[in-house]
Amino acid sequence: MSKKLEDIHKRHAIIKSIISSQEIYNQTQLVKVLKHNGIKVTQATLSRDLTELGVGRVPTAKGATYKINAMGEEPSLKLHVADEIVSVISNESLVVIKTLQGRAQGVALFLDKSILTESIGTLAGDDTVIAIPRSTKTIEKTINQLKNILGIK
Amino acid sequence: MSKKLEDIHKRHAIIKSIISSQEIYNQTQLVKVLKHNGIKVTQATLSRDLTELGVGRVPTAKGATYKINAMGEEPSLKLHVADEIVSVISNESLVVIKTLQGRAQGVALFLDKSILTESIGTLAGDDTVIAIPRSTKTIEKTINQLKNILGIK
DNA sequence: TTTAGCCTTGTATAATTATTCACAATTCTG
DNA sequence: CAGAATTGTGAATAATTATACAAGGCTAAA
Figure 1: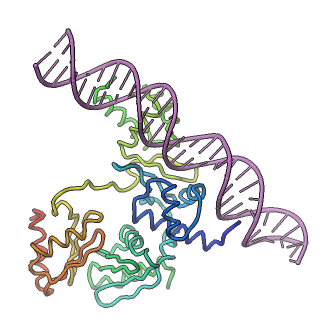
Figure 2: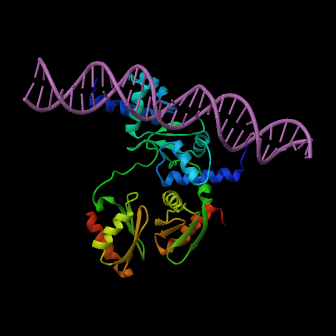
Figure 3: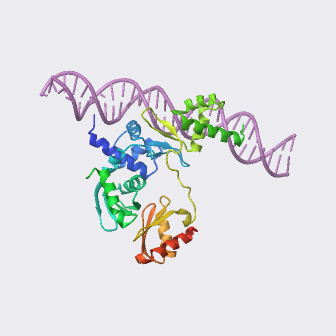
């Protein structure tokens, strides 16, 4: 019943996106959200996935929610988001990132919080993220940061 | 059976001290450690304490452990637009306004219609508003208008 | 002091998460 | 390619955490 490695990566990437873009209160809920995204797994598998991904559960006023480990170490975490990025293009003042359908919000949130140090903000639609560099002079660095997580030279 | 506020503070302080100085894997273990410190409580109380303290549970190689300050907190919802604005940053050509999650649309609408006279338009995502100045020369004025509603000098 | 309204807590239990077991798909080895 | 080892998974269940409820204790008001 073993799945391809690629499939697991994809599922992990989507789990991370979902968790960083919306409030997930328990694994049963996550099972349903994943089903909406065309991924069918059970709670047991998610328990294992979340452990592997280092995703923690943090109490809030509305109930405990899952959070991607900010102080965590995982550098491979980047790869999961990378799976959702389709292309990166830029002009003199902006960087445009194309993502899988419906995953722009999640990608933007992740990039915003962890990767794009030279960006003052991102704006996400459905499959497009616009990243705004701190200055037109730092566009190059922003692009490099993106290429870095994409594993592109 | 109500305890003095002081006692609860003390217990909370000790809990924080314990979980930041050693690895605690579950609440039953914490019950025992606290008993060693002269504090007798049940697992149920610890569950409530940990929620109040915002202590998260994060998976590691050796098993899930409790972490203080594991990840970001939620900002409390407030009424006024100014309170929904988190930050204002700009570069040579745009002004980026960070808002509370999900409040960008509302903030943008308000700013657009009432404050930003030197902006030719705004674009809002989930927690980010981009304001486009009439000219690069009027960015300063736009920023000042924003600072004004924020009460910043 | 008496009463009323909160708090805080423990017990019992519900809800949620982690794990054990069995099994099938994949990968490895020869 | 055959057989063995490995891996990912679901079902069932164990382990852990959260909560409903009841019981006391504290404070304030009369």
